[in-house]
Length: 114
Image (cartoon, rainbow, N blue to C red; front, top):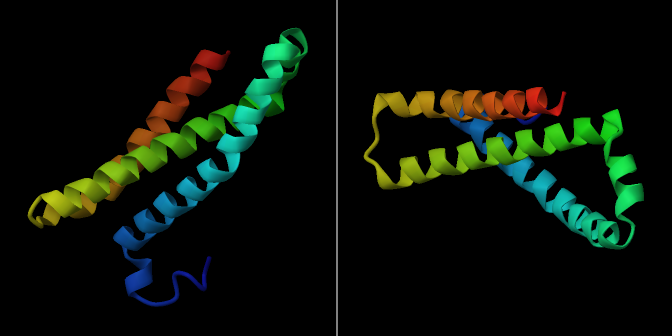
């Protein structure tokens, strides 16, 4: 990651938000087809799937998915605000708000798993 943040512009909060949004989108793009395939199999083998999905590693992966979705949503909302609203100094705080919201949603999800 140090190569990505080497220049001053790339170390800016907006660039880090850009990276988080792109990486979470990539993660979702890779995960969702596997998830849909698994759900398709689960229809035929529901009991075995439910036992498998109760494992701690699967629950951790689900929490990671919720984090990726929340971060991607927050990043997308931030981008839409930057495109449709006039520039203000507080726009720098949008990246932090998007990150905080994503983490909060993930923590709420993780707490409901127990």
